Image 1 (cartoon, helix red, strand yellow):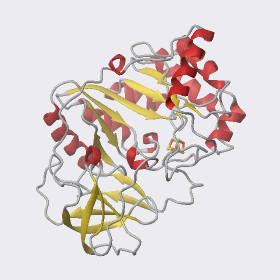
Image 2 (tube, helix red, strand yellow):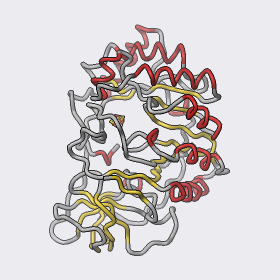
Image 3 (cartoon, protein in one colour):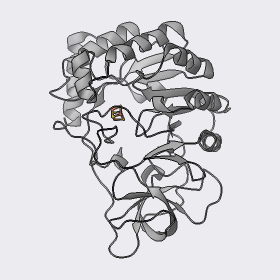
Image 4 (cartoon, protein in one colour):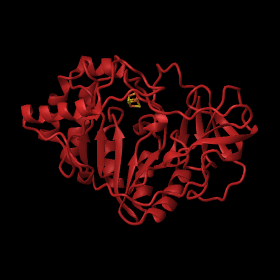
Length: 350
Ligand code: SF4
C-alpha cells in the first residue's frame, strides 16, 4: 500500500518529510518507495521486503512549504539533501521539488542520493536546469552480476547507472559522487574499482567517492557481520596507500556546518494525545499526529507510535514519548508498561 501524505507535520518521522540533525544540511524525504531489495538495506526496502507494510509519498506543496520555514530558521547556506527510506529517483514530482527548493533564498546546495538507473538523459538535464547541484550515486559493485546480486534484482543493470552518471558530469553543470556500501566479504574487490572510476570520471566540485560502512540495523537486512569502525577506517587508509587514491574526507569537504537544531516540542516521558493517521512502514508501527497543532513546521511533529495492539486509523490515543533524538519522535500507548525505545541497530538511530 502507498499512502499519499498531505496535511500532517513534515518533521518528526523518518518515513517522509524533513529531517534536521543540527547542521546546515536538511534531509528531504519525498518517498519511501524503492524498486530494489538490496541484501544489506538498512531500512529493508523494496518489493522483496517481508517486514514493510506501508509506503509513503508526500504531496509536493506540503514538502516545499515546510522546507521554506525550516530554511528560514536555519539561515543562509542550507544544503537540501534529498534522500529517504527508499529511492527519491522514484518521486513523480522530483523536478518540481528541485525547482521549488532552488527558489528558497537560503538554499546554497541541492543534492540527492539515488541509484539513478530509473532516470533518462532528458530527466537528468531537467534536474540540472531545475537547480540540482550534486548526485550522490549509490553503486556498490561495477561487476554486473555482483551488482544485481547485491541489489537482489536480476534485472538491475549497473552499467545504465554508470552511463547516466558520466552523462551528467559531461553534459550538465551537476556533479556526481559515488557512495558504495562496503559489505565485507562480498564486495571488497569492488571498492578500489569504484574508487578508480570515480576519481577518473566523477567529482568535479566535491570528493568523488564516499565509501559507506555497512551497518547492521534492527529492521535492516543482515547478510554479513558488521566491521568495527576502527577496522573500517584502517582498511580505508590501507586501500589509500595501495591505490594512491584518496578515500577519506572530512565533513568540511562537503560544507557541513553545525547549526542550531529545530526546537524539540515534546520531552521523553511526556504524554501526548495523538490521532492515528495510518499504519507505519514496519509492522507494529503507526503514523500519528498530536491533536493540537500550531500550523508550523518549526513546532509541529508527526510521530511513530510503536504498539503491539492494532490501532485503527482515526483512533485517538494517549501516548508517552519514548525517543526524540534529532526530532524523530517515537511514542507508545501510555496504558500499561511503556515500551523501551529502540537503541543500537534501530533504523531510528541512523
Ligand atoms: S539500499 Fe537503497 S536502493 Fe537498496 S533497497 Fe535499500 S533503499 Fe532501495
